[in-house]
Length: 170
Picture 1 (cartoon, rainbow, N blue to C red):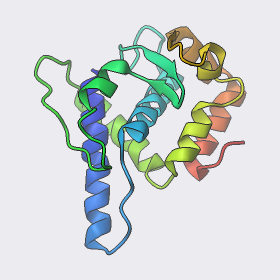
Picture 2: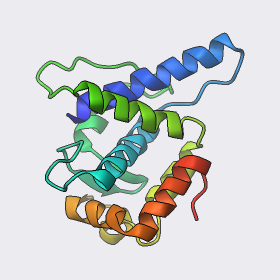
Picture 3: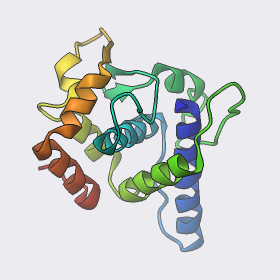
Picture 4: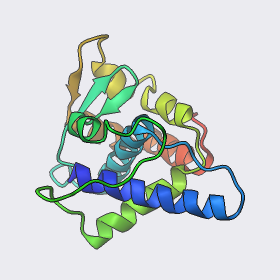
């Protein structure tokens, strides 16, 4: 499902960027790093309102230097180095249903004006799931339970909602 979610993020971001170009506005620089972080924010937001056994993405995130990464997405989208991304073939990958697509679109809409570095900084939050497992040069799986427990905490959820609304971490 991670490939379908990545493709949906790319489609929505490209739609925003096409609108921006048509209106003589600077497009959002969109690379693999941003894709990974928006995927993570989608998972975080989904887990805020869904049971732990019903995640949006069934693939595990790993704690890499620049934040949470799904290795399969990193590998499959590695051909995109220049800030322009296109959806890839989804054959053999689990598709998103219409509600999941709408959900991903909302997260892209919330984050479209947030600088990538601010998103990275948010994923590196002091008590966040990434920080708890990150070790330099030693990618480790971020346990789904850690992501779930983090977003179920009322203070963390409020900080996340604030971040999506303002682009600023508390």
